[in-house]
Length: 134
Image 1 (cartoon, rainbow, N blue to C red):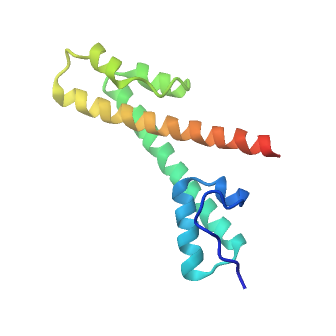
Image 2 (cartoon, rainbow, N blue to C red):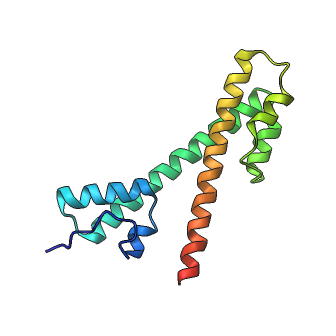
Image 3 (cartoon, one colour):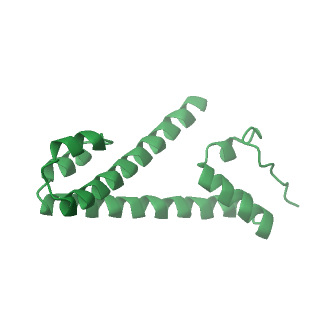
C-alpha cells in the first residue's frame, strides 16, 4: 500500500531532502516499523521539530538570564541582537583573569547560545533554499 523510500539522500524526494539528517532518520525509521501514512508522518515530524525548537528557546532564555545575573549582560544582549555565534577563544582572552569556577559555566552558556544561534541560521538557510525552489 505504501511505497518504501530509499535511504539515499539523492532519492529525488523533495520533502525528504528538505529535512534535517535527524528528521530523515526518524522518518525512515518510523516509516519502516509502523507504516504510517505520509501525512501522519509529516505531522509527527513537525511536532518533533517544534518541540526541539521550543526546548532550544527555553535553553537560550535560561542562558541569557544566567548571563545577566552573573554580570555578563553584554553576551545576552549580543544574542538578542542576533550577533551570535561568537568566538569562544576571544571570550577566553577577554576574561582570562576570572576564576575557573566562573569561567566554565560562562563558556557552557555561551556554547549553548552558539548552538541555538547556529540552529536558527540553519533553519533560515533551509527556508531560503526552499523558497528558491518554489
